[in-house]
Image 1: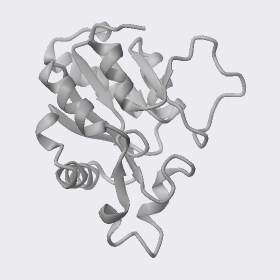
Image 2 (image 1 turned 180 degrees about the vertical axis):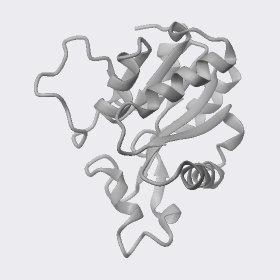
Image 3 (image 1 turned 60 degrees about the vertical axis):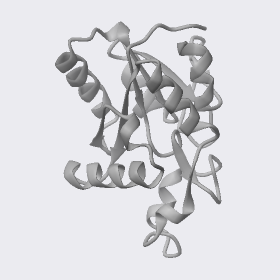
Image 4 (image 1 turned 120 degrees about the vertical axis):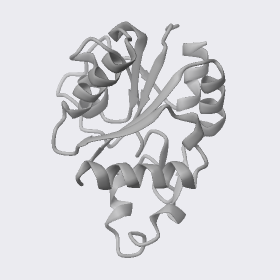
Length: 180
């Protein structure tokens, strides 16, 4: 599968980084609430395999990269937390922007994708959403006509019947072959 895109939206937790202790075997949000890790969660997060190299390569190819993460907190707090993680992993310079959608709204990312595309004068077919949540990442994009890739994992809530046309990857580094 080859795709020609100009902008790639990437989820944060579970897609770009995850808890070192559990990787993708548990929903990653536990790390922000657990008494052992909540006060120093950055020390307990790691990038998913080959993520930094992949993002650097895609950035050099001229692709606009956007972190788009759902968060239960107000947008200003969520944006600060995303920036903190991007700074921690030394990724901030690779991203055009980073945004957060309301954590309780599965369609929240869709409106932000459309807003960013409009502000840049880009079309839906220029964009790709990549994430580890079937409903919040994959379906949110597909429902508005934007291509999406689901990062395979065993903890994402899935529909009762998996769509035949579900497009998925195991790791972010597969984007190099798909997008270039």
